[in-house]
Length: 315
Image 1 (cartoon, rainbow, N blue to C red):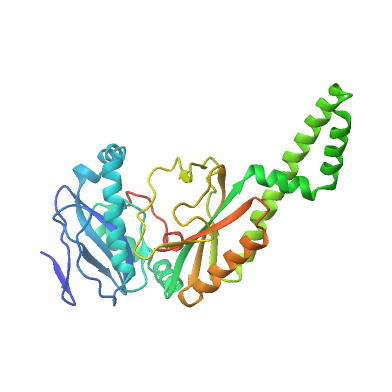
Image 2 (cartoon, rainbow, N blue to C red; image 1 turned 90 degrees about the vertical axis):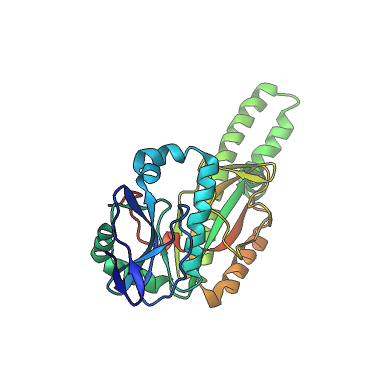
């Protein structure tokens, strides 16, 4: 039989059922009961002290490790479930601070969820205070290697001298010109890489003053942009939350043809400081418009990057 706490039911365990946890919120936050990730099963609230998990029952025949692995190979199923997960997280976020869980975080029972809340209570409470009255924004750095190389050639006196020497020797000494060009190309690539790394460091440092916290994620260096749209090996992108926006780049797609993602930041920004943050992104882009690396900010997002991490099948 379910326990009752302040009029909101804590679910009882069922055979063959797991508990899909969307996130953790303060006990005092009133979140509307919404549809869960599985049809016909609404979200429920699992309490432990001053915090609670927002969860819903799911069939282990669909969400246990092996069937879940197979289901996630179906892009239509995956797209639907990601959007359902995101809808619940957005409903929580609209009411107060939330620590969203990773997609498909499953526990075996409500008791397992309570145990997780109890064991990690200090981390949860600290993180909830951290994200209160703040928004997560992403910043990606898009590098165009050709433009970076051109900018490097313009800036580097040694490369300019080699280019002039090559122009003089090419007509009369093709053999020497060939080897000189190889040396120049090798040096240009080395200097381009150095300049790219320098710009990445500069970008992160420029944004630190306008954010509460900043974290760097893997830059997905294999991710290229073709025909104006990002092509990613990650699979499906998260559903855009209501009011999501981009700044500093193409409004429809983050990247332009021929660009590669070389920087991937998550920024925790005070709600009252968002415009200052976005202005800093724009200033950085304007100051380096001819350098071959530009920043694109997107958000606001649920604060996934500032929430405690757990495995998908956590208990």
